[in-house]
Length: 101
Picture 1 (cartoon, rainbow, N blue to C red):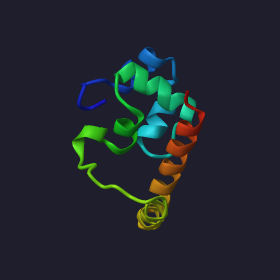
Picture 2: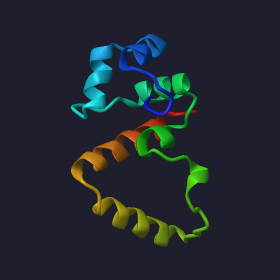
Picture 3: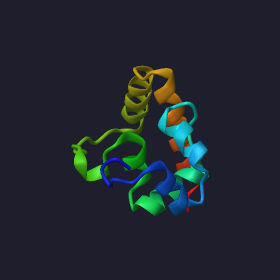
């Protein structure tokens, strides 16, 4: 929102989501559900990854190749280092991915 100079009320109008709800997300009191994440992404024309972690796939090095076992270990290690709040965000993102087409 800041990068695009969009206010909370303006995002509310763009998405049909209450500005009070968006304000709670902005203050990190609550997190949007996967259905709302997709609505926000469509309104802002960004990927869910960019919304949730502030970068898109092309912004970081992705030259790692993992065996399935190594990948699982890497995911677990990375998740273990996250704060509880970030673990909740990752969980929401995983749920959104599982429910996407």
